[in-house]
Length: 469
Image (cartoon, rainbow, N blue to C red; front, side, top):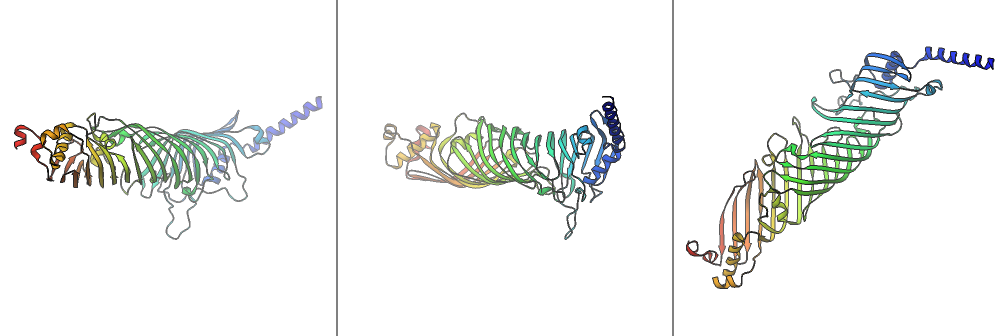
């Protein structure tokens, strides 16, 4: 028994001596390990911990090797490293966890190498013959992820990462992750999980990513002129510079400024997203607004020197309802007209401080079939005019009154809050009108001029002095 205790004591003494001479968590060892993976590394201070084994790095900075004039690849206020004695004594190159505090990561938009030159190794891989390090978990809170444009930090795209956890981290296999982040426009919370990597040292944009997401409580009011709360969910896959996403979007309370109607808008979509700058190409969007289905495609992209992104859309509907569209812009409890609508529109919404309706630009054509005005003071004169064209007297019109369905066709364009109405044709039995004019989308003023041709009598639409006029 005594010999066993002596043997155990000698073994423990040898272990402590070995740990003292081979302790992996010293300032020199940590810097060497980081430099073997990331290149130039600076730290302000380091202190070892023994229960549990590990250390704390204060003021970490991973510098770029290709461009000294660009920001560091990453900076952190502190990094806490935790391991266990079992892995240390069995020579496993493993760390239980790394916790980064105050992390700010900067990702270059494109490679800095000149034309014809090979890509610059911005994040050097582990050297030949070195043993790969594995990490059980990496986590951070309230981090900043900044993607630089070609012009530098002034054109950066910034994402606030509330929480990020990476599991089973190594240099060879995809890394499981969970992330909660804040999307800047429209502002809302995105929760995602999936697989990330392996990281492509030479080309970060080629790094693979896949998973599912939920985008919650995005505030559309940031763009001015509209309001609503957007929620979305779906899946994504591809490389960072070309993420293919598909899913559903739901806005139960969409409203345009000046309208008294909150509309329920629902969409299914497929899109291609550049994860490095947030630019999005919409390859398919099917939107449902009341009984109207609108098919769209387009892009949401930033331009050179612009702060914000421009929305470009082509929108088409073949068998919609005009009342659904009128309710978007009307303050009246009832839409002015009902009927089938078809249209094709090109829409542009550039960034800027102006309200939504003043920034909106559109151009297209529309048609309204079997239209019917909901207000009797508008519909009744049309009914009587059509009946008069058939040769009926006023008494017959009043006795045999029937509803006349009218057709509209024309073109519309909008800029700076003013809609230009061109080549508007209005047809009903016995009558045809050609109209041009303007509609102010902001204050709702309407100015129309045109010519009416009819075989009916205008006097039949009124009575008394108005009839004489």
